[in-house]
Length: 365
Image (cartoon, rainbow, N blue to C red; front, side, top):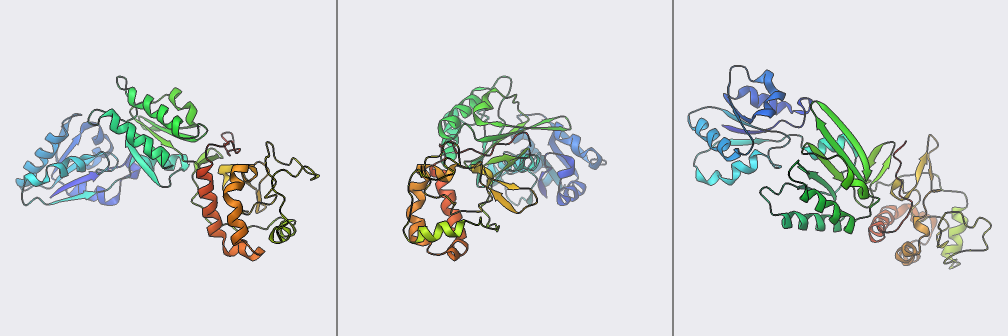
């Protein structure tokens, strides 16, 4: 049996099954730094330490040892199927007959780094910036379309002392296709220490990055709160509506709509940079999504829109006005159709992602 085993990023993240399979193995084959995490499991085993760049040799050696009747463990850091030894193994699987094998998954750098940053992952792409085996133009193409698709992006192998161009091109492509205010999480492993830092996309090129760094680039809805990166999924939240909401929407339902700026309002302007008062009371309330600037008032179950001017942008009003007119006919509809409203909100955030709408980017709290 050949076991292709992922041991995660740190020993405490190794799975129980991975430990069991290492214990059962007669022969251990690994890039030698990986063995530091499992030294206590190696006693009594034949351990074959290999260097970087001889991945194919490791697989051929494992097959040779397996055919001699041994249980063999090939060790990968992270997950063996994500830039790991499983990829190498399956590339030559049809060279041999009667191979018995299994893949033991591990915690990959993207999920480990995400846990250190908060909850930044949603639909995502994982892209290696190493161009040792991949043409640079292929890497550039993947970055461009992942950015356009608004995927959260995790970058592996971003930069080395001799290889900087892919990282530099990644920064350029991202800024061309994504808001430079987008949060970016940087997770560096230095010995046994994990160091995290959050910056804006426009600042990424100037950060201290090396090979043992994982970079997570947020999407158009990612924001930072209390020092954590958050990419909301859009769950429906309940909170008490402001008292004047029903009065406002009863007029709205009757066609009494004040489009554009309401210069006669005693509170005007109630939001900085306001361009439209059409939705004086937001139809998405409470969105509970800080990506546009709102936040919870602590311990009050009140969603605070004071710092959100997104729904007052004319481009936003143009996207949502017809839907609200056609589909929201009573106050009950705000609850009955809340999920559809929140999906409309997400779609509109993507369409208006280049606007300055007071992103909730709180690095200090």
